[in-house]
Image 1 (cartoon, rainbow, N blue to C red):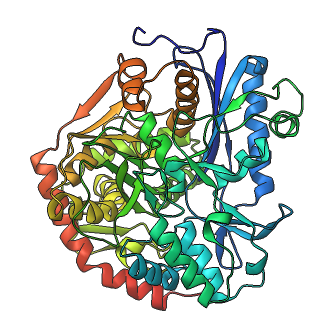
Image 2: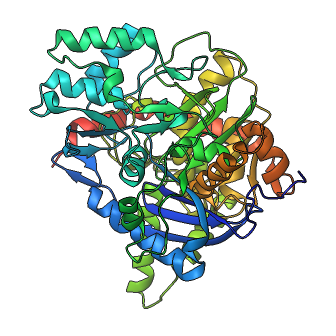
Length: 528
């Protein structure tokens, strides 16, 4: 099959991908050549309710229907041959036997699970991060929350939407690997660890078997269900989207990010940078150590991946840009926010390599990699620091990638991880050069951005839909499908680390690490 040629028997057919991200719900339609023919987005925000970062599921459906309606105005929904759902990984979504939600949806951003994560990590000899679904479940059990005995099913946000559309309690294996550890040989949950969890839970009065309440993991390429009549109306009340079309396994945003950046083969990796930032490094071998800073998850086909995840990235930077927008308006000048972002990122490249002595902490929420249970955004400087726009902008971008740097150090130095290149996608890379160059300098690794960098996870899940259709007709691995058919003609812009920038970031990180005691003190003392 020539590069770029589609896999659908009907070349007019379209594949739909929907991703529920942290700030946008986005949908795309791609054609038989994997090009985006229609895209749509809907803004939504998490909220802090009763101490938990959450989204209301009614808002999710409002956004999903909105983006599908937008797509239908651009291309006929009757031509959609298959679809897939992706969303933020991890968190806690539990339901009773009647499908009623139990408790609130607790997102990856919550850090109230430290006791559970510590106990499970010690019991498994395997790092269980605070945001993983199993940590949330065990914390609920430890806390004896009223609904715990009613739990019949738990899943991720993508798994929940998928279940509502087709009735299948399944999950893409990459998303499942952020719920509970996966055995990459059996492509299922780790048997030994599930047995350990069941014993721990039983001692706390929880009698159900874990495998009975978790969704079944499925690798990329599998058919994960068919759209029901009710599911079609959930997506498209107008009735243009037809029931019966196939769904690929619902995947997490980490997996779709790997697909969207052609980073599923060993020695490849990607960085997704938006509200949160995380790096995915596909492993050639098992890690020697167990690190609290590093998750072990999988690609959408089940291959082991080291993941460094940070809860905070550009949210603090976004707040400053909004402030500048207000200043402009107060002075009688209306400036488009996109123009402000472009100016801000350009200025960062003109700043001193070390940020001029400024230090910023972007912690809107807690950041486990920095040892902080709660968020306190801070900016500090010495009296003789070189305070100007370039240094201010560079410092905020440095802050957005500083926590990631600390986690990646373990992989690159202690584990001697070899990466040929990192591919970036997400909001940090939408402005040319700046985020890409500063990340290359921070990690001392070449960073690439492809011509599809702005398509994101919605495009990634649409590609997994197309791969599912291909798998019904021929046997081709996911990495070859991406390399030979999707990215064969893609434009790739690669930047090498700049020695001056590498040294400047090193100096910045020395100040950053020393000042973490200030950030910790802020958590203790800056309270409402």
